[in-house]
Length: 321
Image 1 (cartoon, rainbow, N blue to C red):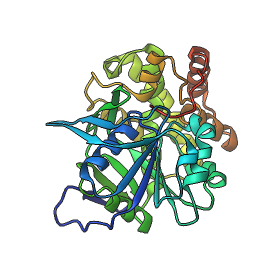
Image 2: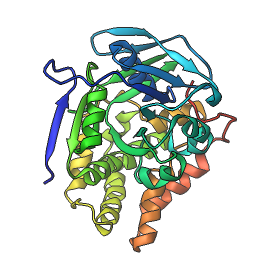
Image 3: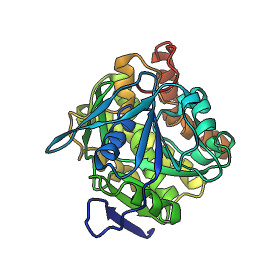
Image 4: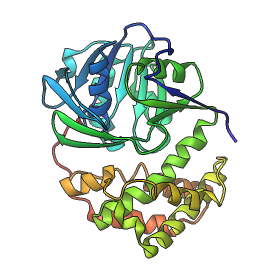
């Protein structure tokens, strides 16, 4: 089992990092939450890179609603290099936000990638001007109600997870003063794959059925989930990841701890007619299955149905708001 350390960033004994410059690309359900909490903490200089500028961000939390002013810019030409970039768009939006990365990044920048899927380092390395990429696993459930209003629900023991190394610790310190808890994992690849297992069933099935997580209370859906998960675990094992057959049942048990009223990111995108992030979740499993010659019929069928159900992409530049 990998060594795991947890940090609750609201603890008063956590050493605060020095004030730094942070650019958040995308204010959707993930980016809007972290932007609002960072602006409310007011420990760093935060800008948001968006399509439509706003002057404030509202975050509905468990026991309170916060409203914080925010500097939001709509043109890459208006920004310069920063200490940290928090990349919060979907994977499929990366080509359209590359101009932001080119302006914001230098070799001294660190890019925290708050996206679903795996393979972020390989995908982004050619685009970030020599910056260091810090993959982040997101556990909290975010929901966006308006361009300047989001809600966070804590969906597990932790809100975010990073590698237990210097960059991971610095990312954790960056978020000190916010109500987000962070997991520092020595075996980050396994942690990332466990989240991918959750996404591999929760996102496609909720999007295809157009139902929130209540759909996973059905026995026939559980049978489908087991088929998808068993294939994904076999692919992960072929790639050298520490997953085991019992992780399939564990993943379903974890999913059933979430409130049935919660929606997934792919569910919300399907409802709104936005492109689906299927290639970075189901597509990643299918592609690695082909690479390692592991059959993935259930995931391949899911991917085919997702592609058939996807609305025509709009003219979005990849930024949420």
